Length: 495
Image (cartoon, rainbow, N blue to C red; front, top):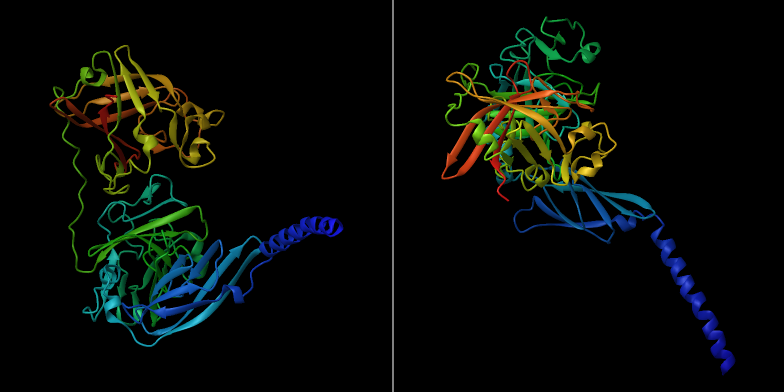
């Protein structure tokens, strides 16, 4: 009996080891196509809204729903407003790899109710607009065309590097072209009036391209008939508008897919990547044909704050006073005029997303000393030399090209306002700034280190002191043309 027990005890470790090896081997073997199978069925809402369910569980399951949308998870929903055949693909992943399985989904009838969506209606005018909705470039508005970095900086999705002034590209063909979107059949019509405007790198694709005298190239072009548009809505991203081969919008930079940054009844703001230089993203603003917002005139300078309302004493308090960003919408933003956050974050409160910005202290003392205290963390961006963007320990700046943008002491001067000029706060020193390190008068840093002993001047455009509750609004122009302003609302730190 003892002999058999010894034999069993000897075999148990081998059995356990075999089980472990088998389990490990299974996990490291790629899944099969059969294992990536899935089923689907209509929902109670509509036969055109389908519920898809994977047959098996995997640690990652990605869906291409065949309608321009994607999703993740074991069970997902796809919406198919129009009749047609769609190819749905499920890709599953385990430690050993991945595999995809596809099925064709046939939608028998169009469901008009599913087409009645704000996104589609704003673009096309809706089902009642039998002649579609026609758009044109908003030529009379500053920033109707421009360029910024790709991917976008933490400042947001707007033409950060260049913004065209009203009618700056007249004669290029950009302003005379018209673009009509139809809901029925997802048809698209492009009327060029003979000329189109294009990136210089695309000239070889357009016979007869020439220099129109306003930068880049123009070319004679007649768009083909039978163009279509489609819409994709990636999970967590902007809607993506795609024009079929032969058509495009506003300015051709090699691609035909546009991110919709904003769409309303009377505005369409699009972003698209330069296919010849993917470090660039272009932007265009369109308005409906027949909608006339009026010729844009330069915004008047904001009324200066009365010198009696904001003084040096307000800034330094009883000898030393610390200020910080107000945790509210509108307290941190960039726009086409002082105090505006139209470009970013466009009315949104980002204090919860970027708390490390809203605890920074900007400290002014009566001896002319200005100190920056990040309170242990910063909102880092790549130009500062950090390895990742976002809230992170201030210690991450140590040893980088942006180290001088960390905690430190500098100097400041205060210029009182008059009846015609704003009060001004100037901070001076290597890495001296208020709120945003990269912004300075007439520009933005794209890489560190900061310029040695540089001064940055902020205009005071607002000051409120009601019942001891203070708010100080400052701004600076990062262009030489008054096109882009960073503005901040500060409050005293009473902690």
